[in-house]
Length: 221
Picture 1 (cartoon, rainbow, N blue to C red):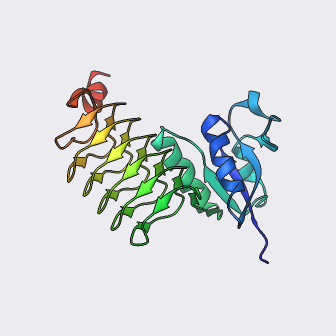
Picture 2: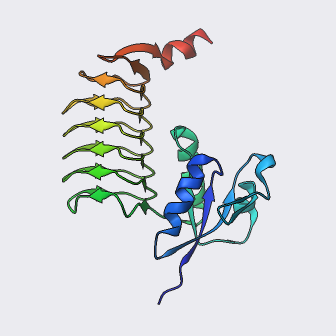
Picture 3: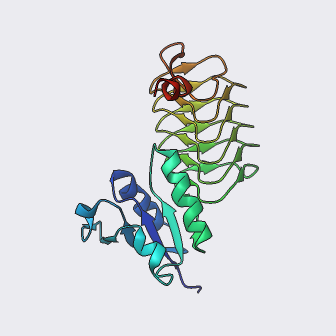
């Protein structure tokens, strides 16, 4: 029997705790340590796994682990930063698929995914690298989820939807079929999206409407 990959988890918050449990359920992976830049967490033992220190230890040590999972939930930009950096350092960026999820055999998946319990992914769906699909979310047929995007708990994505890079669909939100969520945009919790969402905005409400533009905020600064 092949040795299990010694797996580090970046992020020791509540999301990291869930990720650690999924790592422990994978026959080929072994959770060996958390790494977190919050110094107050160093030395904590979470469900039997120790917070070994900050992420700098992974940057500086001579490969103390084989694989890395980035356990950062909503902040896709930060997750993307760690994902790229750890991959360049030579760590294997493994994907986690909870055994109580359903992924269609015709779905195509990238590297470093985290798919949590109760998730459904329909046929023909294409999922990029470092995508988070959180607890009980539903992604229907022929969707496209670009790199580093996030689908939060109980979100419902209808067929043919395209979610752009670094976009986030909030908890309990719904997106109608064949729509597009622009890169870096955020769909607020409970929103119902019935029209395309442009890039770099926040939409909330029923039906979802733009309430903030990241471009406008940058100009105001």
